[in-house]
Each structure stands twice: as C-alpha cells, then as structure tokens.
Length: 94
Image (cartoon, rainbow, N blue to C red):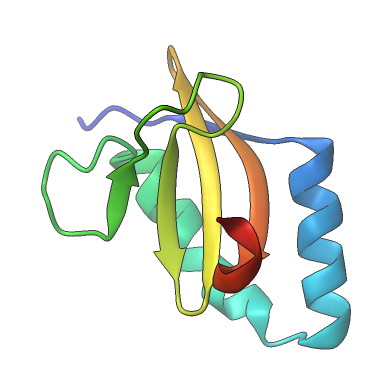
C-alpha cells in the first residue's frame, strides 16, 4: 500500500487560492490533480511531475514547488504532512 501524505493548507494558501478562484473559478479543476500528486508523491521520487526543490529556501518558506499551468504551489514536507504555503501566478511567486 502506498504511503499517503496529509495535506495541510496554511492560511496564506487559502487566501491566495480564494483570490485566484474569484477571478477564475475554473482553477478549482486545476488544483485537484496537484492535491492527488502531493498526497502520494510530494518528493517526486517517480520523476513524473514538475516538482522542484528550491535552493536556499528554509523550511517554513516553501522548500518545494509544483507547477499547475501558470500557477505555482509552494510547500514543505514535515513528517507525513505536506504543508501548502502559497498558490500564486508564476510571475508573482519568484
């Protein structure tokens, strides 16, 4: 049985997502595959997903990022939990 990680969205992530969702409700369909990927393979051990570990980023600031179209989700992995920190357009995240 594969290991399953628990997704914990931060307040900032929820706020970012709400702002984007109000402008574009179709974004909800785009985030669902990201949730599935992160709950099963947040380290990208299968090398199937566009996940990167960011350099010079401390834990708590979103050490990893996954692409979802034009949007980026930054997250950390703490034990069996995946903490989602931000959901922003690619031009705003870096």
